Image (cartoon, rainbow, N blue to C red; front, side):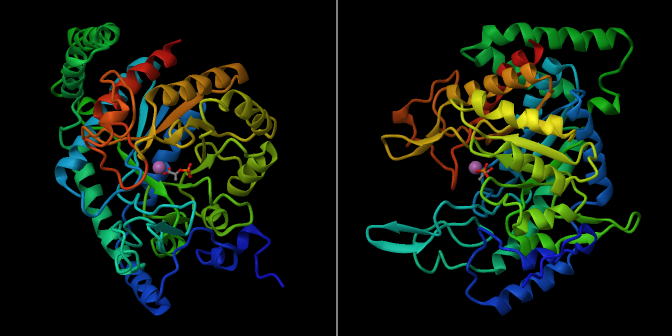
Length: 453
Ligand code: PEP
Ligand code: CO
């Protein structure tokens, strides 16, 4: 017996419920979950359909090499680490990176924060055992608490409401910052100059920073008032997260009154993770029916045929700007694993944005016990990604980075040389290790060099 709808026209925000949904929490009280989802259905949307359409337009440009996508933010947002300063510092780094990338690529940077909704985490094991005690794994602040005790680890659906409200506050502040003068080009450039002046690799970057300086002066000389030009003060800033908890996503899915189309109004863009991209699974079913731009993570073992099938399923009409493929294959594997995937997708004439997540397949456990990543491996995967894209004749369309604005010591290397013995000093992530502010800007300068080659 199959209740699975065969035709796309049968899609509703609920059809995913007839499919196997990986990585969902074991909520102890189903009625409590239903009550929360009913409440969420009555809450205002966090984003509007028209915004998601604007992002699609910008992504269509990225697919053709006429824009470059930067997705960046925490691995997992946290209830405890929620502060205006934290949001500001993250935005600051993202804006700094995007000025460097824009200059390097010569095309606009499409800025997407992994924030205002990036709370839920897929886990490799449903339980975690410490000293003989087995408890449910931490699945993100939307589900349970990070602390390792039985009460804290019990899934609590009230957390979905808290995540919704924190997302609303985060998005509100991000909108205020990016439209209210904080994103001023001259100011962001000044921050980058400070970085160059205090960076060990400063000289290498100085040339690029000086060119940006000259470009700004040139604009001024041409009569463009840098203080007055709205384009230079305001930027578009979008948010995205992994669409993992489908009940939450369903509750925030609304029909657009202009077009009649369905949009998941929890974020501008949603992505499907490496662990939930099963063709017949609930996540692909749910996201196939919403019109937002969709990302899919692709690990090193994905088959080219599966990628084409995913493209067919998620974008049967081959709309530009609909689909971003985030390759996360590992520094050692990308050169072999990515070319056949690109060939298959190109042969099937699917317009996609090719983007690199150089973080998730380069994670390892350091001898000190900390989960970490090497800056050099991250750069090696990016270099491999650019080389493969160039050889295949497709545009390297973007990058997807886990970072924070804080001065954490979670990833090794970078121009400030975080070493193994430094990891314990400021290891603050609840999930994956993030680049700190300086490592992130370092990375942007490196990628700018790759973009100019
Ligand atoms: C993530 O982006 O945090 C993540 C879990 O990625 P992936 O699905 O690629 O492993
Ligand atoms: Co992560």
